[in-house]
Length: 215
Image 1 (cartoon, helix red, strand yellow):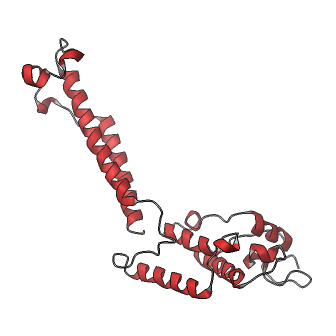
Image 2: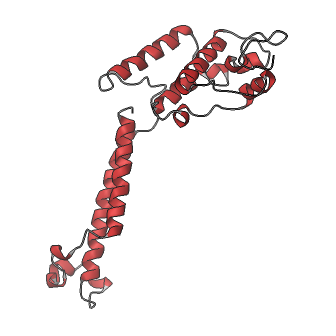
Image 3: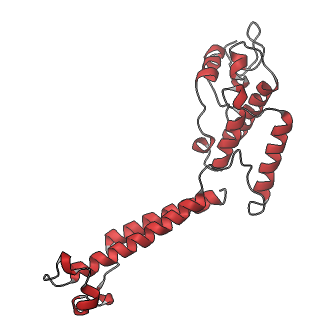
């Protein structure tokens, strides 16, 4: 009787771990409650356990109404990040934010399956695709790299120039005193700080690329 994974007599009909919040509160339910249960099954398939667990049926019912489940990717890194958003459409606490019908659920799952089979040809459905404009972020990162490179070059050039170089003469320097500028081969791009910056930017771009590819 204390097993929350079983339907118990004397309680609200249903298995507590898979019951929707409105059912756990004893409210009226419709098809969206069944779709919540489907989301709980998908969550269990991806992680190995239901989205909500507890020591007793009543404890589970309270957590169903009050707590959000942990992200699928946190529990199983083999699962793609977009799967959290997909399952989240089924596990929304408010019924009006949930997948509305079995037909909508079928179309959503079919589109996701097409993306898994051919990521380059079939995009994820807009309702679960990331809301971040990755192309814009990648462009911003590339612009940051270019800016960092330019700034580093300027600093190296002026820090290597003779001490008589003043701020007021910087703007006229290339035209009037090119002899004050050191040759480019004197600029050392191989110092540790520069390598760390470039490695960090490279790692960020790699993450963005993986997210953009739906991995």
